[in-house]
Length: 109
Length: 109
Image (cartoon, rainbow over all chains, first blue to last red; front, top):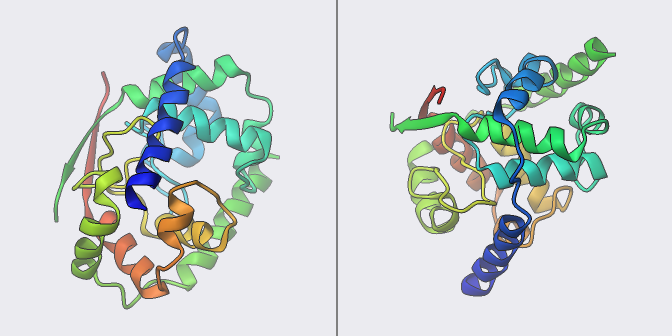
């Protein structure tokens, strides 16, 4: 069962990898993020709000998928559904490239 | 418009803060994560898969909300909807406490 679920996840990932964001522009993404995202997700993608996720260093394909889901209505959130609505595919690819380019490190408490 | 959306986000956050996970147990969460989550999200909450998010250091309330959304069906994902189904409120609180306890640092490229 777990193996089948993992395969489903893997195939979904591969699908996104094939539709890769080849022309994404991290610099344009950084500029767009500064006005569209930073107020909630922080200037470096580290949220200061308890119900807002950090975006820094998240996998690019995951970010693209979630932004498209918000834009299409597949995933709903009061704020994000409005923010994502006017984003073009290129905007989404750029934003994802920028946040994914931030390097994360983790330390256990 | 942006201010109204921010207020909506803030109120949602406050609602979750009031329903805080006071009895969450990070050690129990760490143990549960090792068997239920690490295979996709990594042993320290850093995913190695392109369509799987990092969980390390995410805000506790955000993690609780997302796990509850997967469990209830409000948010859907082939794998997560199955994984979240059997989780109790206590399991969810413990997992969120564990992942939120991991300290993140970010470096620009």
